[in-house]
Image (cartoon, rainbow over all chains, first blue to last red; front, top):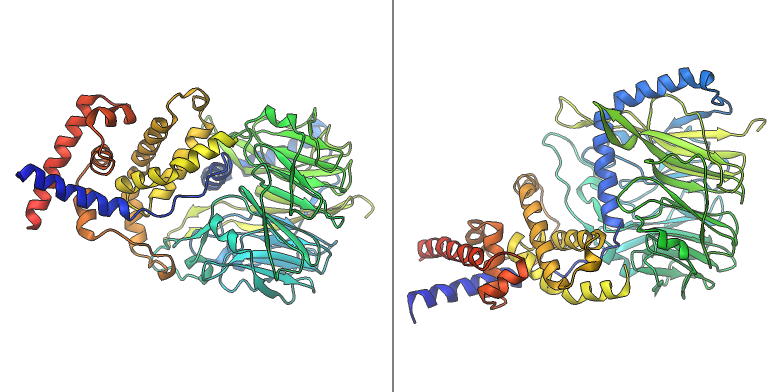
Length: 442
Length: 154
């Protein structure tokens, strides 16, 4: 054996050991989900740090010019209250944004971030943290009634946990979550600047590999959708069944009659048995794509649904409407939706009445900074064909989610202030606030 | 994602993860493969690509190149934080990592395909979309670096 052969053999062993340490292949990505997730998080941080000053000026200018331009200044949105101070005191990178809002009652809302779930029962004045036991929430809070809600969190041992409440978030009962869900998130350590105290939620931050959405039409019935999969419980979380929708689902909404509707970047599906079996929707509308994950899905009834999708990797919106419980979808011709906005959430308390949140681009130094710094709320009263911007309180940098428990009441989850490096090697965090809207005369 | 795409990615996920592990190590490999998959699927060229396996290999290599740029900084940050023992995996020995650390990303790719997949330089060249000469150059330099390191270990 020559020296060259010996070297080859040693290199072969070395490469073998290296390649042999390969982890399990990653789950197949949803073509838009991961990318949009990372882009949205990254761009929001960039936008907030660069454009907050410009945004504040733009908002002030818009408020000044609004009467001149004929923009209706009433009814207005009002600041309802700052969401739990703990959100702005948590060290490390989370939470730098919130991801959903659920308001099952006129004054009860749950706000979710990657670090905690907060609940208010008085329209946003006082907030209480859900007992997440140091683990990160994985899903939105889903409610079957004002008092009965549930959400998923990452267990400290990597196994998902399902929490339910029957008293509007005062106490929570813990169950095992669907075991297969673990495949769709991973726990990783988040670096924390020296000298900054950390909470357990930061040390065990969760990286979700795709959107995880939860819908609970009844107290004991919940459906979870993840990229390429779904899980259903019909006994309050004691047992979970796995299901496989034909299209990768991003958002789900289910009804007490067992109908469920999902939409994802490449298609829609529906189920008539709480999500145990799925059928592909007749959805020629999706050939308009490619789309990123939908910005919102809202069904005002088991028949009527509206979905907003963004082009893959780009801001903007296409609205799809279904009038047969998600079995077929068609694109909606709309007016009033400006191009280039990133639409984050949709809520339709009635077939004709919907609200949508989004973030508009901001110019900075002659360049357009990604949406995320200037939140907008739009409303429609004709099922989504015409949209009108609403006036928001000053200082809002982004709107992350919107939820309207009725046609007369709406809440929006917003952030104020930029993320800027501070002298203390930490970062100035945006504060999260709840905006409330009440229809005139209400 | 249409079904043929899903099948194709499932089929090659394991070998691409191993290929990525040979270039960036086990902790970064899943992210690199995920990133490569996503880039392929959103690429306008993807629909017209004839040799999709080779295209995926090149996408993994490109993603690894991009990842490498931010890897050093990230490692420095993460070194200060302890990993949860629940999520450790079979890591290669420090000697192996030290040996590979001396190679460029392209040299790693060529070495992995040559010694793990037993591919000839011409096949490696076709797979990675580079010239036969470039493969031989990368291979020769990688072997020289490794010889130097391995000789020092004796």
